[in-house]
Length: 78
Image 1: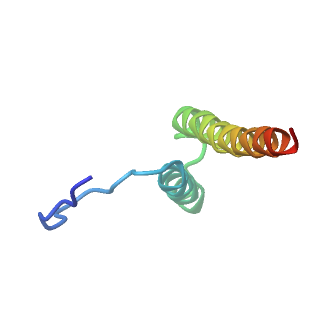
Image 2: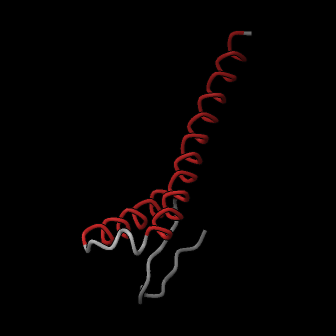
């Protein structure tokens, strides 16, 4: 994959689930710091649902890696 040579002008880059989780954490932290958690409760709930889905994706990839390692070990025993 080629690297982007253009300078970053604004916004954020979400390449991995951890990037999205970091952004969600920042938004939720700001809402609580400003005391506006009730005003943003719908948004916070949606963001936390997305965070949970991202967590599931990370755990699923860990499980898949373990399965592959177990299958390879089983094949080596044969």
